[in-house]
Image (cartoon, rainbow, N blue to C red; front, side, top):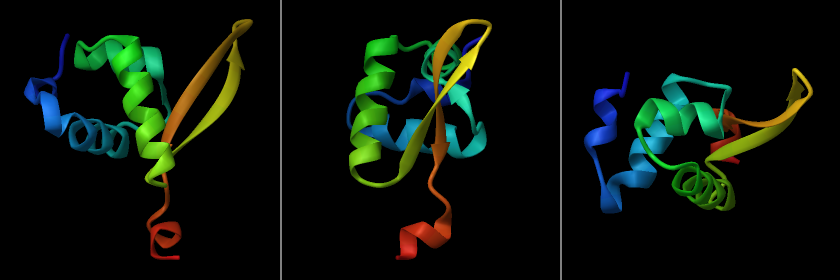
Length: 81
């Protein structure tokens, strides 16, 4: 089932993904892409840009012998620093 938040496109993609990550913490890039109805490449690119801006961080985890990159928002206290 695709979330309603996925309707935003273009310049709003970063904002949409950032809001989504804040709401659903710790999902993998694949899981985010599936829920939003976006490609993994698009999600990966936006996550990379958000990481460069210091808004999200990723953690590499191994589950069922698969490497997953989980995405978390940066804590608000770190944003103030």
